[in-house]
Length: 263
Length: 265
Picture 1 (cartoon, each protein chain N blue to C red):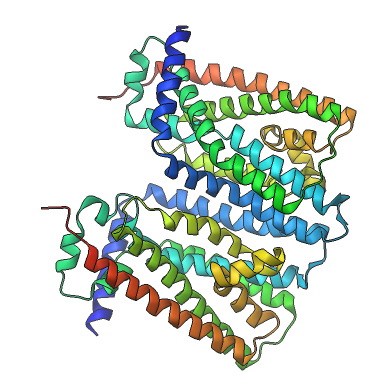
Picture 2: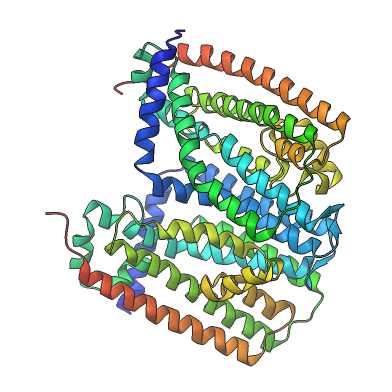
C-alpha cells in the first residue's frame, strides 16, 4: 500500500518537473513521430521487395514492430529514466549523491526502479498500440481468449526480461562507474524492432539466448500471429523470472560494494 | 578571416591525442552508429537467401553494406551536434578570439574523431567480411572513382552539418532539426536499403536531395551498381550540392557571427 502511494507521489513530482519545460514537448513529439515513421517506412521498403522472409510476412513483422514500440514506450515511461538517474552519465553514483538514496526508509531496488517517470511516453505507447492494432487487423485472425491471454503473459515476461537486463547493466556501475554496458545494450536492442526470423541463423540464436531481445518482442508478437505453445509460454515466463532474480542478486552484491564518494 | 595553417595543424594533433584517451567511450558511440546499417544488411541478406532481391545477390548486398558502414563512419559529422553546443554554451567566444577560423577547431575534432573511430570500425568490418563472404565485383573504374566520391561525400556532409549547426545562432533548439536529418539520412542515404531497392517515390527523392551523396553514393560506386551515365550524374550532383552548401555556409556564418552575443566562455 505504501509502495503504491509512493509511486503516485513519484508520478506527480515527475509530471510537475516535466511541465516546467514546455518547449521540450514539441521536440519530444517530433522525435516520437520520426521514430514511428522510420520504423514503418523501413518495414515498408523491405516488404515492397519481398512478400515474406522465412515465413514472416508484412503483417506479422508489423506486429513485432508494434510490440517493440509498446515495450520501448513502457521502458521510457519509468524503467529507463529511473535507472538512468542511478547509473547513467552524471547519475547518482557518478556524482556521489547515492548516499541520500540509500538512507531512505524503503527497499533501495524498489526506489531506484520506479522513482522517475516520463509521462510524455504515454504518447509513444499510443503509437505502439496503434501499430499493434493495425497489425492484428491485417493478420486476419480472430483472436481467441487464450491467444490474448498468452500475448499479455508473454508481453509481461518480455518486460521482465528487459527490466532484468537494464537492472543488471545499471548494477555494474558499482564496479566501474565508467562502464557503459547500458549503451551497448541500447544499440543491440535496436535489433528487436524486427522479428528474429529476419536475421541469419547464428544471429537468431544469439538474439534468443545470449542477448535475449527475441524474448522481448518476437515471442509476444508470435502469440498474436501464430499462437504460442504452452511450453514456450511457460518457458519464457520461467526464463524471465530467473533473469529477474539474477539481476536483483547482482544489484544487492553491487550495493554491498558501494563505497560512498561524497561527504 | 585568418589563415594560420600551422596553428591549425598543431591543434589537430593535440585534439587527436586527447581523444585517444577516451577510446572506449568513442568505441561505444561508433558501435551504435554501425547498428542501423548492420541490421538492414542482415535483413536484406536473409531476404536474398540463395536467390537475388532486386537484382542483388546476398554477397553483393553484404559487400554494399560493409562499404556503407565504412563510408558512413568516415563521412559522419559530429559537428552537427558539437558546434551548436559551442554556440549555445557561449564557448564560441574563446574560439573567436583565437587567431584562426573556428572552422579549424571543428576540423581538428573531425579528423581526430575519424582516426579513433576507424581503429574500432575497420577491424570489425574486416572481421565481418571474413565471416560473411561479400562479393566485390571491383573494376578499375569503380576503384578509381571511389576515392573522389568518398572525399566529396565527406566534404559535403561536413559542411552541410556545419551550416545546419550554425542555426544555433538564431534558435536555441535548432538541434531538433538534426533529428529530421537523421531520419532522412536513414531513409534516403542508402541505409534502410540500397538505392536500387527503394520504392519509386523514395528513389526519386534520394536522387534529388543531398543525403544520398553524403553516404550511399560512394558505396554504390565501389560495388559497381551504377553505369557510366549514372556515375557521371552522381558526381555532378555531388559537386552541385557541395557548391550550394559552401554558399549556404558562408551566408550563415557571416550573418550569424554578426548577431552573436554571449556572456562568458
